[in-house]
Image 1 (cartoon, rainbow, N blue to C red):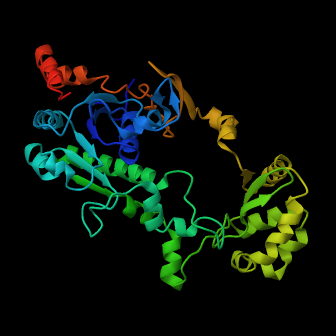
Image 2 (image 1 turned 90 degrees about the vertical axis):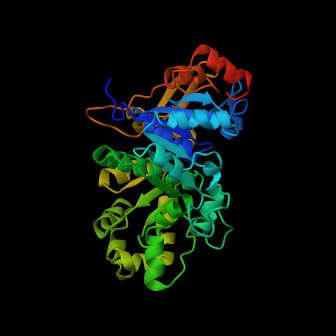
Image 3 (image 1 turned 120 degrees about the horizontal axis):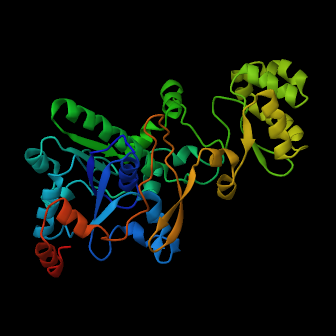
Length: 395
């Protein structure tokens, strides 16, 4: 089967989440991804639970379809092997702190001089430049410093981390986009370049209308619970047996919502005649809606509102997402057979192409599973050379 990135080879020098997720996106699209790991321990994420027969489910969720080769980059011979591998690759991805790759002799300037077509992607907490560039970073730190935590949670409540590692994942996705764009230019011009991805930059980019509101009004956005700062009603409400989310994003939907709730007169109430008025008077509106919505179950309201064309849905936990018929119809939860862990359940790629369907190539690799394959197949080392490297602790 044809894949979009057939013929593209990626050297993956990343660990934990942001970098591995970016390289996994490329692997899903058909790139050959060679993940370099430290002999004996590997990616730190291999130590994150839960575990299946000793294998990390966390690691499995972001490293499927890759090859694992163990090379000690702290040793000169390991650095030389990595440089030679770069010469056989189209893309290098790393997420070390800025400057670390230079100490290994694998910095962008050195490798660009050797391999001018190389696309060199660096994903870091704060980018390659600026006063924070040398600081370590994790997702929760970026959510805090990037403003997201300040607008998440309940009014007057403590800071709340978004439940998904959105700072890591946004950096991964922007990184994949940047790599693909740089690859296209390299194809056209023969010249590669460095793609510098900062987690903080990506988080600031995702603040979208919060930045606009502050720039226009000077008012610092605050957490609003599930409520939207500019659209009303656009939030969760308690039904009789759980929570329902309703998003009446325009005046037509507002009138349809009122009719569906048996509140036709409310649509003509001058306090709520426009979205701006509804937002300004949300404290008066919400109790009216809450009283009515508490009278029926989530399923009953979802059925009524769906028939009326009002966007609404239940609050689903992860277990309910697993069993959702739409998720199943789109084949978004799949199983991969791992040689040690057994059957592993992962989220499928969300990308759907009419001519080149995404085909997952397999589970996450065992530590060092492909070391000999990579060294002999890509670098054409002999069996004796591989064994000598192993005896010296380089691989």
